[in-house]
Image (cartoon, rainbow, N blue to C red):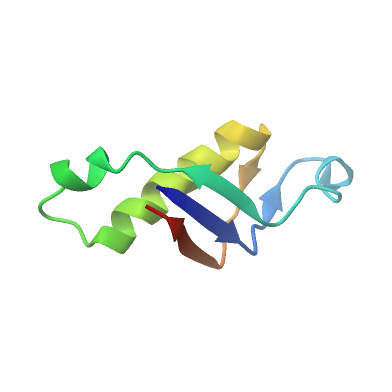
Length: 73
């Protein structure tokens, strides 16, 4: 499943490093994670995964993001 993460607020000790980074990233979400989660809301599972994955993709941490949107399943 592809998930779009928008309004990313990048974080760095040197904000000059992150000022030109995209604020929208598309991540591949492994749908099987939803099958293993019984206690969390689906949106929470998607947002938790997206939070880690956008930092892994770009190489910088973030201080939150606005929305996640499912693009395809």
